[in-house]
Image (tube, rainbow, N blue to C red):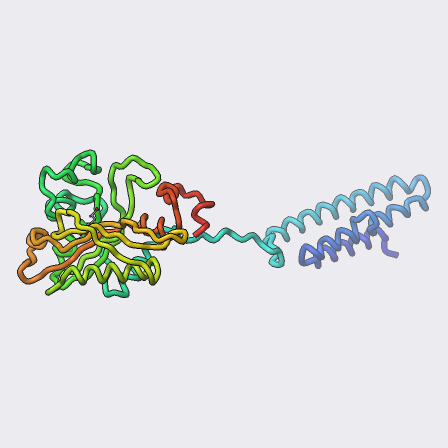
Length: 324
Ligand code: DAH
């Protein structure tokens, strides 16, 4: 008759061999090594033996138990290595979805509105030379706009551009008229930061050069923009002003409803491109004329969304940014 300990051990080894996944391994552990398992059950038969047989029996049982425990441990680690510890029925963790910054969205909307009026989008460098930032724009040597206190000069005649009007020059240098472009981008001025000033902000610049362009065309485009941006009752007002690169020049105000109240808000400047500017880029002012405008993107975004402090736009506080 076969030895019952040998039989149990052989069965256990064969069953362990057959246990193919973590559930089967656990079932095996319970069946053989568990507190109500088959090894325990056999151990309890020891009381039926005579006193001289007991130690031999106990020692054999212990050896079998230890060897099965070791075999189980080895099988478990091998199976843990083979099967990735992943439960596909777990709900999982979601990561937060980000969203575009309110200024980025405003720029996209501005581009969309002017795009529908036939303007194409151009870009220019933020590190500029004084020729594009001043000279070609008819801003002479001792003009206050060239003050070191008003600009970030970098040396070697370079600077951080103080206005996107630079892109007018870059476009006209490379493409012959007719032209109808806008550009949106950052500009830099060493302003002290407060609720309405920051040393970096964004502008949208427009330029249209063609034959027989008048200020009516300019006002029409600004008017359409105002209505698209601030609603069907928005208005545009042009106040006579001075910019070196336009003649005549005007400040642009738009009338919009803010918290239920109609208000005029100054958004930038505009005018008819000065003949000196056209000549600087070898465009004949007798044949071509045009208009230009520059509006503050932050002002547009702040008025549209009721943002009271420009600094909030750059603090990257999610509690603020998530509102839009
Ligand atoms: N560049 C001007 C500024 O930063 C804004 C401006 C005024 C742009 C008149 C223009 C313009 O194109 O015609 O204050």
